[in-house]
Amino acid sequence: MRDPADLIRLYCRDGDAGAFREFYRSQSPRLWKFLVARGCNPEDAYDLVSEAFLRFVKTVCRDPRAPRAFLYRIATNLRIDALRRTRARPTEPLPAEIADKSDESVREQAYHLRELVGRLLEREQNLLLLRYWIGLSHQEVAHALDLPEGTVRRQCAELIAKLRECWGEDETGTTD
Amino acid sequence: MKREPPTEREIADLIASVFEGLPAPDARRLAVIEERLLMLPRRRAGFAWWWLVGALVAGAASALWWTVDYDSNDGLVEPVPTLASPTAAPSAADQPARSSRSENAESAPASKPVQKQGPVIYQRER
Image 1 (cartoon, each protein chain N blue to C red):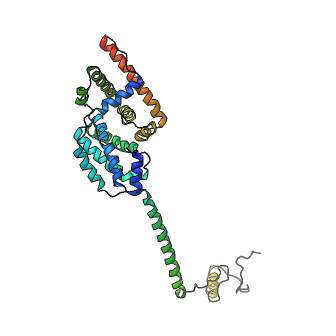
Image 2 (cartoon, one colour):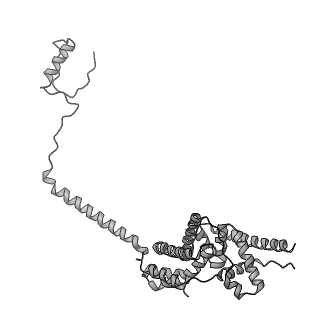
Image 3 (tube, each protein chain N blue to C red):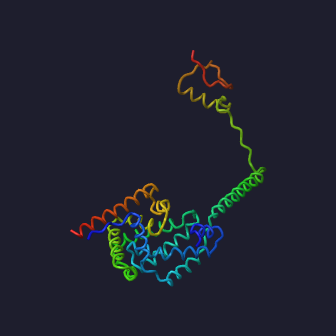
């Protein structure tokens, strides 16, 4: 699979529709999942994916260096706007696929982790998911969330440590 | 039984596996969005160059127009009338009226010579 930045560069330079198609097919399912993971209704997530890509197509050629960061920046902003309109908190149940495939301990861990991540602030959840799930670099996360790169590095480390600490506390709490 | 919490590396990996396991979207709906996007006109990065070219052409045309306009009006421009210098003495036609007004205001000596011309606008009193 080609690098997303190369695909968008091809699209912007030569108008290569195939390159854009490849980029879209590699990114849109994960973007949809990201929006659902952020508490978006699955139906609304399709609309947000459509709107995010629409804005992306219109503006990405001005600076096609970090297209994934740019796409997630648009999607995150759209999600925040939608959240402000509905004022709803994310309440997604544990996905059924995980429960079916994994054994009890893994399922328990996954549930626990989702619960802990759900307790974090909105921007902290975005940061964690973009870095450790979507796989953006620190620099790309900084671009996507409009934060300094150093802040992203520090907060990532702090958040992981915080999750680990909370994990330990909850385990102690449940055993007492 | 109390278990050890996962390490930081394990937590990072677990985040990826947990959220990657979310149900996949409907491929048909994503394909509809894809087709809609591909029908949009592409915005090229080099678009700004066309503005620069347009501005240069417009500037050249404007300069040419002004040059041709000035050349064609050369024969029609009226000469600017020459004005008398503000420091010059009043004309002869103006002088009697002024002198008559001054006679009414104050009685000037009749023997005083009248200045007919010359650039003097100030005369020291004696």
